[in-house]
Every structure is written in C-alpha cells, then in structure tokens.
Image (cartoon, rainbow, N blue to C red; front, side):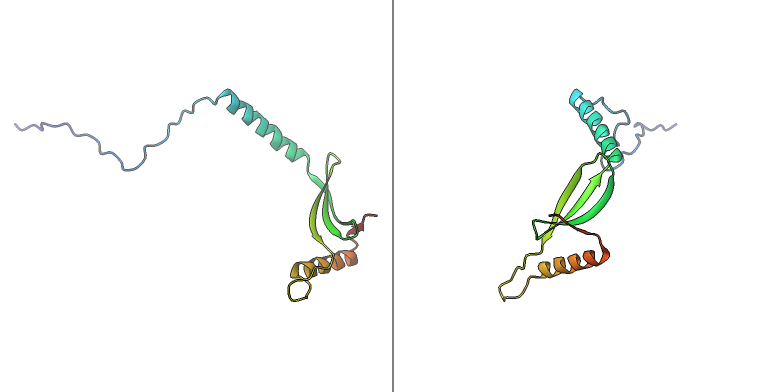
Length: 115
C-alpha cells in the first residue's frame, strides 16, 4: 500500500491576480464628482449647437460662430485676412488658405460681415 506523502495543490497562474468584483464605496468627494459629471453630461446633451456661421470681425478676423440652445453664441478665431509676408517676400501659405476660404464662403452666401 503506497500513499502520497504530499497533498497536490493547484498550480498558480502566472501574472497579476484578478481584480475583486466587489468595489469599495467611493469617498464623499468621489460621490460629489460623479454627480457633477452626470450633471455636466446632461447639460452638454441639452445644450446642442443650433446654428453655425462664419463672420468677419474688425475688418480682417475670420471667426467661426456657434449658437447653442440656451442662446449663447461662441466665437472661435480661424485666421486673419491681413496680408502676411514670409522671409522671401511672398504671402504665407496660411494667408492664402484663409483668403480662398473667405472667397468660397462669400460665393455660398455663408459669410457675415460684422460692422
């Protein structure tokens, strides 16, 4: 009669052990941040962009304007239509792109000029 002196143990898998399935409760500040994030996402969802247009302000600044559901208008500077010259005495590439964009928008009737 032969018996094994040692008890067989299951082999351990290599690598990091699996994460616990039960999460700890977040701290008070963590709960606050979670609530604020939910509110912010809801506000963003409700406050969608209604209208977009391009506008020239101060005679040379091209801006993208966005009107949102609450009535606020946000403007983003796109570029300037003032002639800019590089080291070689030629107009810059960015200036040429902005000028072409302005001409295209004028043809389409999507450009407003702020007086």
